[in-house]
Structure formats: C-alpha cells, structure tokens
Length: 447
Ligand SMILES: Cc1ncc(COP(=O)(O)O)c(C=O)c1O
Image (cartoon, rainbow, N blue to C red; front, top):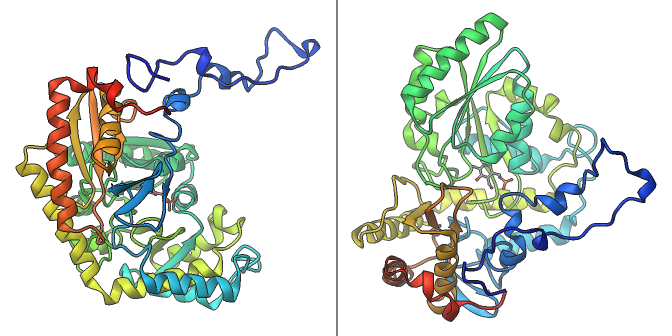
C-alpha cells in the first residue's frame, strides 16, 4: 500500500490478523485470551509485518549463494550474507555435502549423542575443532543460538552472578533469562564499567558463596567492533571470574589461522569457554563450545539442549570436517576476505562515510534519517542501483539513525567494492537532499 509516510505505515488494528473467538459462555471478566496480543500488539518489528513482509523482512534471495543473487526477478549485488570465506558454494564443499547426504541420508544418527546418536565422525570433528581453536576439548551443538542459551544455563546456578556486555546477542540475553541468580550489565566495551560491575558481582558472589561468569563477544555483529577480550582477561589478575566468549563472527575471520578473536588478540588461553557457530564462516548450520576437558565433559552430561535433542546429522558433520580442512589449508580465503574488507572500509571512509569503529569484516554505514526515508532509500538501492544490503532502524537502534550493514566475503571483487561506494555516495546525496521524503513514489514497488 502506498502512503505518504513511506512503506511502513503506523500500526493500527487494521494491520492485525484476525483470530477466531471463544464461545461466549467461556468468557470470564478477569481473564483474557492469550491470543489477544496477536490482535493488539504484534511486537516492535512485527507491527510492520504487513507492509514489510517479503521485501524488507523475509526477502527471498534466490539462485546460487554468492555476490550476485536474484531478488524479485532481478540480479543484485549482494552484501548481506555471512558467507565470509566463500565456502557456501565452494565446489569441493558442494561435492562433499552431496556425497555425504547420499551416503548417510539426513536421518543418521537417530538419537541424542548420550543415548544412541554418537559416532566416530562427531568425535573426530570435535577433536579437529579443539585443535583449531587451541582448546583441549569441544562439544558439538545443533544450533549456535541454542548452544549459547543452554551452556549459560548449565554453567551457573542461583548462587552465581553473570556480568555481561550491554550489546550482547539475543542468545546471550536468552541464556540469562534462565538464570535465577544476579546479573550485572556493563556498558558496551567499557572496561572501567566492566570493572565496576565485577566489583558489584564479587560482593554478591562472596555473600552467596557463588562464582562469576563474564560473557562477551569476539566480534559484535552489528557494529563490527571486537570485544576487548585481552583487557578483560587482564582483569583476571584483580578479580576472580570465568570468561565465556561468543565468537560467532570471529571464527574463521580473525586470528592468524582463523582460530578466532582470542587468537587474534593473543589471549585465547584466558578465555575459559569459547563458542563458535557453523552458520557464518563455515556456511553450514550448528555450532560448538570448546574449553578444558573437564568443562566439556561437564557440559556433555549437563547441557540440556544436547542431552535431550537429536544429534547433528551426519552430512553436517562430514560437511563441517571438509570446511575445516579448507579453512586450515587455504589461508588465501581469509586473506581475500580481508583484502575486500580493507578496500570496502577504506573506500567508504575516504568517500566520507561514517563506519564507526569496526575492526572486523562487518561494515556498518551509519546515516541519519527516519524509517520512511530508510525504506525509500533501500528500495532505491535495490530497484535502481542493483545493490542488496541489510537495513537496521529503530527499534534495534535509536530513532533517527539508519545502519546499512555490508558483509564483505572472499567471493566479492574490487569492482563490486568500487561500484558500491560510487552508488552509496549517490544515494546518500539523495538522502541529504531530502529526496527520500518526496521521491518515494518513483521508487516504490507494490509490496
Ligand atoms: C553473535 C551471535 N551469536 C550466536 C548466533 C547464533 O548462531 P546460529 O545461527 O548458529 O544459531 C549468532 C547468529 O547467527 C550471532 O550473530
């Protein structure tokens, strides 16, 4: 629907789905239907669903995974996939994925690891991952998100205190929702505040006879800045705590051999529990947690999401082994990723863009504008400039801010970078001119 305000209309009951109602005789004055919220409050993002669905949310990128993919019938230059090393469509990866699926099928193993779902290949992958991230042992997990939630749940009890970074990923926040003890948040990457929260946590832990788990990230996926892991590890000289790092974006992209942000900062030994996902550099699905042998043995027997859920299917395990082999033996993929990253980030900075303080491949471009301006601009980018990237607006970031997030990969080339910077300069010129307040009708497509 076309409106003057841009693609996102303000929420009204008209945007809400209709639901069936209870028979009248069930109605109690003190009760409400738990589905009532569906008709009254779709949530901060969900309230835009009717206008955004299929274009700004849930877009369908089709064709082979790569820097050019088809969106609504048009081939676009794509900067929105975490296929950092370009492994998603690597011919050897595709071959092994297909062969493993043919050999094992998708069902094997048919149970949880503890009961009937263990295999030599699962254990081999755990050994190889441990060596890659410089830890003694590893536990495979079916999903990265679920791994973080469940590991946090297993590691703390009501006597313990969690200290965590304010910009932690949703999976860390959800893990904490299971924690019934105290928690303290420190300002994003602010070491002085981190120390203050450790002092508060120490008092509580001492009173409770508990311990402290500090949780942060290797690379923050929205801003692209690295967690200050080395400085936090230094705090261990003054405070007694264990450190858990979510390195979803750092595994494969950071460190001399891709072993992650701890390897890059020279402090991997100080990280007590290390998490990596297969969803990004590995271009797969699943995740893992690595630590000392005793900790991993404890997790194997206590992480509820793994004890009570079916093991990672064999083709994913074989696929992960292949990807790991390629990551170890082909440092040129990471080098290429960084060549593209450096070209993109220095090119954007030289063209006057604000990319914040990223020091990883994640490249946010910070702009000022309203949500309608952001949607018009992104639509212009897609329809008229052939560029697809992710857009972040309120409520994820403060009102009046727009982030266009670019994810470089080893499969992009320098021409892609040049084309993008040139055309970003054009759209930002239009944004500053106020064109996206008035020109939306030209670029609007029917959603
Ligand atoms: C920082 C971070 N942690 C955890 C996850 C969840 O990982 P997965 O997609 O493997 O569930 C993500 C997103 O993928 C992430 O960005």
